[in-house]
Image (cartoon, rainbow, N blue to C red):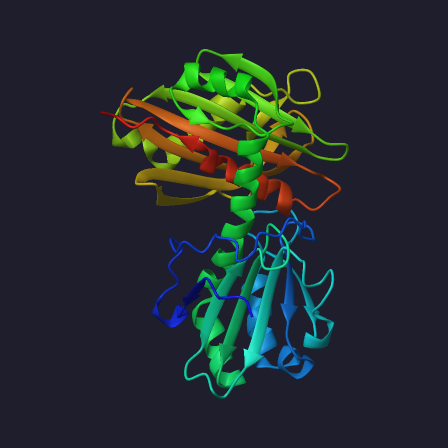
Length: 330
């Protein structure tokens, strides 16, 4: 029986800093499944009851600011008797057990158990009711556990299959280190702006970096961030003459502040469209203040996928933020 690497009582708070991203095996087998698919190993009566409802509300909650409703994860339930073969090699697995010998609900996390990359979380508790309450109280933390696993896979791929020539350009223009995944091509550049795009047969991803002088706290309020975005993304042309990207006004963007590696970021999430033509999709931008240069720096990402789901495309662009690092000042 393989050892559980990191057992965390979520009732006390799940520490995302736990060194759980270690293999419990040295397997070279490749994990199965698509990004953001989640296998839930649970008995049918539990799945059809309140516990199953709580799990679906946790992992199938809709992602905000997509054109159509899409869940955070695509869930697939299997009974314990089917948990073998390719199912057991899936990239994301949540096993749910009711065990009266367990005093309080808890979750154990293992990585790369039968394949790699893989996360296997075991959620167990004394009763179905106790587990239901536990899941309801820890929805964000449980979802974040699998979100982090998907993000780390994306980051690892980008670091392995990167584009040094693009990274050199970004470093010289903005003074930051950033891994640029393979597939992105340089579409446009100027002194304070660079635009990369990644084209698929039925979809498109892209990101922009732009910078401008920091002139006080008012430069990073909601109105100023929106004005700056529209000023810069106007440089992205639309499909017809004179058309250009802008921020949609039908639904106001959503703003939040957060810290990543000690740095304060301002997130703006909303919809973009094209002035003078008919195109649009979701976007997410991340803005910070570079105190070394006294400038505002923004990473602005977008997705265009009119006929396909947008969740996975958008998540990949969100992961770009985790590929950016500011030099440590002496």
